[in-house]
Image (cartoon, rainbow, N blue to C red; front, side, top):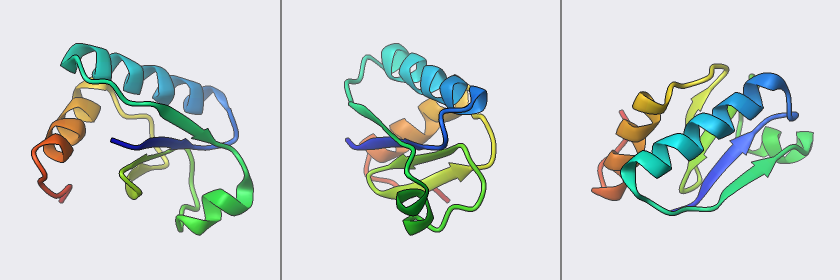
Length: 85
C-alpha cells in the first residue's frame, strides 16, 4: 500500500502524518508514508489545499486533518479493494 501526505510540512501536515501512523498501528498494517513537499509534485495531484492524503495514488482527502478513525476506514476499504466514495 502506498501512502503519501501532500503538504509543506506545516503543523496540519505533521498532525495528518501522525494520525495516519496511528491508524496504521491500530490496524496492525505496515506501509511507508512518503511526505511530498514539492509544490509542483503536489499540483500534479490536482490538490489546491493541503494537507492531502493519497492512498495508492488516489487523493482521498485534502484541505483538512482527518482523525485516525476516519483514516482507518479509508485504509480498510483500500485493503478490501473497495472504492473511497
